[in-house]
Length: 283
Ligand SMILES: Cc1ncc(C[n+]2csc(CCOP(=O)(O)OP(=O)(O)O)c2C)c(N)n1
Ligand code: SF4
Ligand SMILES: [Mg+2]
Image (tube, rainbow, N blue to C red):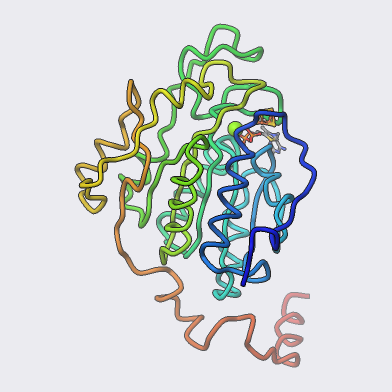
């Protein structure tokens, strides 16, 4: 039986008190609760503090370019659909540099789980504003505050009728673990936007700030109700609702992609002569 110890314990390069620690714990717990062995899991990330998370988990990992985790994850899942593919990324990496890939991933609906460690700042590069930073957030690079309006990925994903859209908080570990588990179990693309404090560079959206606002959705909330989900996704005042906000069962890309009819690419015989011929054509 798989245990949390199978996913290892490593020295980290995060600041003490960083919100990445509870997220790391919740991810490991969710993988164990999903009865997944490390060799069945691929963790993909880009660049950032959040993107270091896969370094601290004993599973297959691909750490690629900034903002480019989703294309790598998509290719990996299509080559070997038996893998559970989880992307761990920061708000800068996935909503700025990788923004267009996010829209494509939602539309394609490949069976991937995207966990966004959303600290509303560029942590790794020392505190510039990110797409989720709010207007009055003052940084060394934005001394008069942020001039662009914040990007609400949860609302965008709901508007695009994504298969699974959730918001979590690093201060609610068990709740977050359940969300990640549900996201992994969902067959299709799933987004979990996870609010997390950056104790070094975001002095506005602190642990106390999030704790005061984050509230679990009521037990009678219906995530299949699009209009209700749209309203909940846009709530960002005294209350920030956390939980499974929207669910929409739709066919995953893998189930309607003809090239996979013969089974996963990883298991198919390669005709080397034919491959050689094709390569010759491009010489
Ligand atoms: C193509 C490219 N552009 C910019 C950078 C610089 N860069 C590295 S990490 C980062 C932002 C990190 O912010 P986020 O994704 O929110 O992660 P965090 O560190 O906050 O967890 C930036 C701009 C880079 N490495 N590559
Ligand atoms: S800079 Fe912020 S996000 Fe990075 S490790 Fe420190 S607290 Fe965490
Ligand atoms: Mg960030």
